[in-house]
Image (cartoon, rainbow, N blue to C red):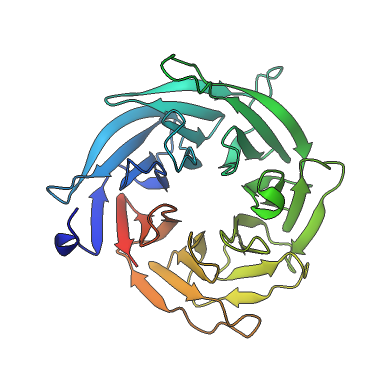
Length: 341
């Protein structure tokens, strides 16, 4: 796409409220995103959209059915384009989808409670960037599960993807709301989780017999999201349910926030670190605002964001494109917008 005619903002309107949303990672699929519907019934949808170079418009390439709203969507973190073109969604179960030119088909459904008629819904998941055969899910049943995926990379042979439980652990005293792998120590074995007990806990797959509490909310409010700094694995961000601030933590200084970002005027819904910089982070909230912060002053107080964008509705998700660091995506109501930063 020629630089001259590229706009700063592109918008796509879906036929339903958008909740889950994420950027494709493959180098040959720039400006491709997946969107999940939020409809309060069983029948929900996922759409794959892409920016048409000629028209500079988003077009829907593919829509498929999804049971219940998907709580999170991620594309396989395949920056070189060597794995199958896979997409994962969490909801009642973790599902892995294979994206084709015209259709998307379910490749495997990963179910951890085979002996029960009830499933404990998954609140979130993360896909390991160093080893794309590892995924971790978080559940309302207080557990996190680490999954191993076999994607069979033999070229020219059609390979079904299959998965197995590597380990399941009781991570918190109450529901677990988010899980994220850390880039520390090789990027494969360390992960953290947050949950309704108000704590951030850190785990090492090599030593699962104990975990480290790196933060507890002073009021014991549930913590909904956590997000690791992409460049400096010492830092992570978290936020409490109905909270208007984002807390930045340093794992070397447990339990004491190194910064609090509190310019939002309504509850924060999303956090995204810059993929290319250790000192920039974007937060998005019900006050219609997406704010980008420069935190290099830490531990001095971070007073104000360096950039602010006001959307036409309450922003419920924000993602910073890992392979296109000039672009941030937000969603509000039935709209997706990508913003050049």
